[in-house]
Amino acid sequence: MKGFTGVLPDGQAIHYVDRKRWLWLLSVLYPLQPFVAVGLIMRTGNELWVLLPLVINYVIAPILDWAIGEDRNNPPEEVVMQLDRDPYYRLLTYMVVPLHYMTLIGVAWFVTTQPLSWWAFSTLAAFTGITAGLAINTGHELGHKNSKLEKMLAKIVLAVPAYGHFSIDHNRGHHKHVATFEDPASSRMGESIYRFAFREIPGALQNAWTLEKDRLNSRGRSVWHPNNSILQSYALTAVLSILLLVTLGWKVIPFLLIHNVFAYWQLTSANYIEHYGLLRRRGDDGRLERCEPHHSWNSNHILSNLALFHLERHSDHHTSPLRRYQSLRHYDDLPRLPNGYFGMYVLAYIPWLWFLIMDKRLMNLPHVNGDLDNVNIDPVAHPSIFLKWGRDKMIEPTYTE
Image (cartoon, rainbow, N blue to C red; front, side, top):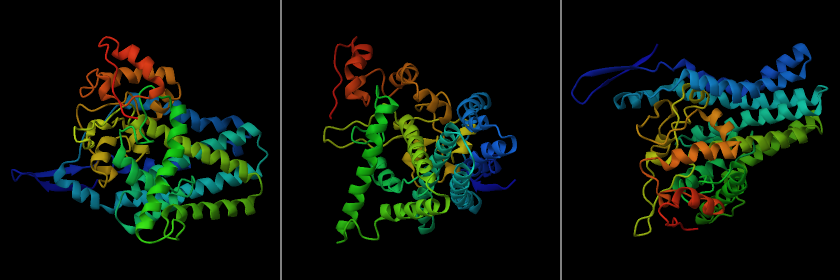
């Protein structure tokens, strides 16, 4: 297995081997999961197989994450530059782009040409949309890089879930306002994922459009100029959708609607758990404190990280956005999730259970220390949160809407 050699400050040589090197292929293969259901249905004629990918992701994967455990190892800084320059890791993010298109087109063909029941049609469309939500994760990894090729590939892959505005809002909006009341992609304590979705999804689109409009206007161009990055990706979405409609017929319309709704929902699920309740404070001068590692929730669970290009080491991503997935670091004493993302999604879909587990974890964080002034609170839930967590101090938290 390939290794990397560096020199420590004391002059000693160090040799590092990424033991997960070949396991990162799981992130590449993940989008192909719907074909498992398709193949089994074609082989057996039993539509119940359409449920298998859902069971794998939301039952088996969380159990395996718990059983396999966590990996807190970090690559030595002395070899990170070599690790980042290794073309293998970059190639994996390139390879997954056409696979997202293959999955969308292949499953669209299957559901529109086979005599499926309405529930099997809808379930397969929904799960294909969930895997397309991971196309946004691929676009996330690619869109943060400075090369023109990777930025172009980000636009191309974001066309699959029809989420062409993601890179604009995420890179220039979310990273600037993360863990603040102003950020639509940072969930608040006491805010259910369902209420969060109605704030996050339109808020992200509005922010992205405003940011891109300001960028183009500053160059003397209209927001409708061909250089609008959002419109470029959405144009690809339109071409793809029209081609599918012309080729496969009207059944593509409900398929794509269900597909895109669940793709959006997958991103919403990730955004919800990544910064829940965490808050960056403002100083006396009104300026936000710098984004620190403790402003993101993290997970080192091995399986789900291998399937998501290390997305769950989210703190290091926010402190070093250009760092590639294979080099992201674990930090001690950070907000930690009790399971990988797939397990946490299930928890988030049951709000009372999410609040029961996560609110206590949030309030026990060292930098929060039980003080509601250190928490990003949902105004709707403010009274009940105050009664539960702030009543002993008899001092209501202060926050700026």
